[in-house]
Amino acid sequence: NENFAREIMQLFTIGLWQMNQDGSYVLDGQGNKIPTYNQQTVQQVALALTGWTYATAPGNTPQSLNNEYFGAPMETRPANHDMGPKSFLGCDVPAGQSVDDDMDSVIDCLMQHPNTAPFIATRLIRSLVTSNPSPAYIQRVANVFVNNGMGVRGDLRESFLFAAPVHCLLVGRSIATEQADLRTLAAWLTAVGGVVLALGLIGGWWLASRAI
Image (cartoon, rainbow, N blue to C red; front, side):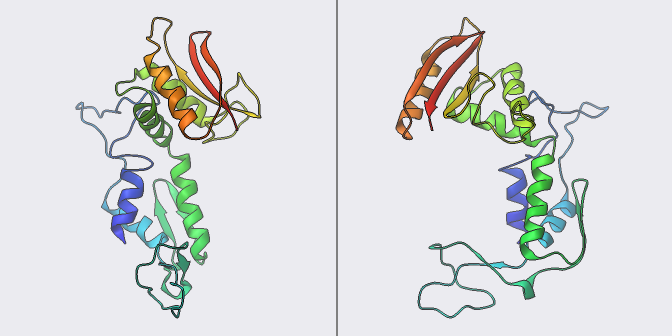
């Protein structure tokens, strides 16, 4: 399904245009934005994600292509999986991999893409804190996505200022920033079941933390 292959890139991981770590766009020599992928990329990712179908609904017999049912995880159908090699976004997927292994290859490739950190950082900040974050703000969060301080990529749960069992979300702000954004974040942390343990300014970073 090329729609899913396109949407997992466009909407959830790398976006349409190449980005710098601060969320600004990479430009070519004529000042134009540079696409992150093309139609060939979509086709190759789609091939890597073949071999899946809806879960078998209770009481039904498993089919090669099940009807829609969202009550359980999707199921693999190796007979429907493309077993050839795939190449996309600078990643090479060898031939002969299983349905699950090809899916893992897609996820690993997208996680390592340089756009993923600023793309996700920008959307998290806009959804949880402010609709117009500064480039410096985006870059600070993106840098933590790349490396959480312990060599782990994609882990935004803990900051270098706190250790488990405290779960922290850093919102890098200037000292002059109004506290309204932070209060909104604290309310969100409480709403999702957390207990706000700290709310304040440390070294120019507004912090909100909650117990895991």
